[in-house]
Amino acid sequence: MRIDKLLSNMGYGSRKEVKNLLKKGAVRKGDELIKNSQSHVDPKQDIIKVYGELVEYKEYVYLMMNKPPGYISATEDARDQTVVDLLEPEDVVFDPFPVGRLDKDTEGLLLLTNDGKLAHQLLSPKKKVGKTYYAKISGRVSNEDIILFEQGVTLEDGYVTKPAELKILTRGEISEIEVTITEGKFHQVKRMFQSVGKEVIYLKRLTMGSLTLDTELQLGEYRELSDEEYGKLRQ
Image (cartoon, rainbow, N blue to C red; front, side, top):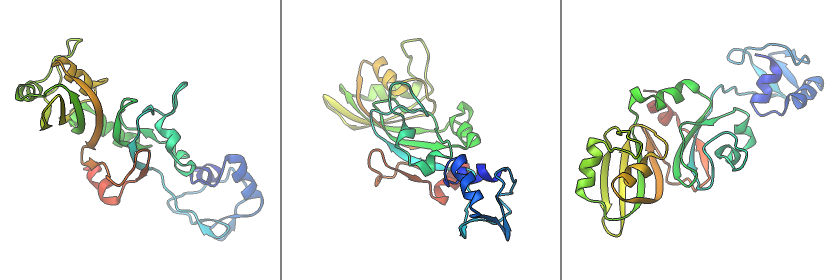
């Protein structure tokens, strides 16, 4: 890897800013002074220091976010702010992207990473990764709805969903529920309830596979996954 790319990815500035660091003699590979921005280094083997500070190389980043409403689950959008806009510059340099999507008005657990292989595993229909949501429903959710969800609900376009697990937390004019699905069709939870004559008025994702939303994260906040969380996701 070129030294300018490595240092830029590690948050030491733009390629131009890194070039200036190199010219100033701030960068060393072991005992060797590096001034050429095109010099190649092995970040996993070489000891790189900037002004004597060890550069700790990371190839991938794994971020858990409590997504707030009003943000698009994308890396860029011409009209709306995206979840990437909530990230600090030192995390943006890794070019993370959201794994799957949450609707603009939906809150809760969102994983952002630049690890395409892991993202594919989590989103592959073959893996049947469960995603659990908490929702407030306009209308009384019934035991009949539980059975319908278990069987798979026919959406307005004729698609029959995979079986889903529906739990009723409270019943009333506004019901509270948890629902676990193993696929991610567009607006799926909202469309499933529309198919049984009800409306989702609040939606929050709680889990994705083994990953559970950190309740200490406020809306818009995020943190890196712990080693334990990362390990379970890889299983």
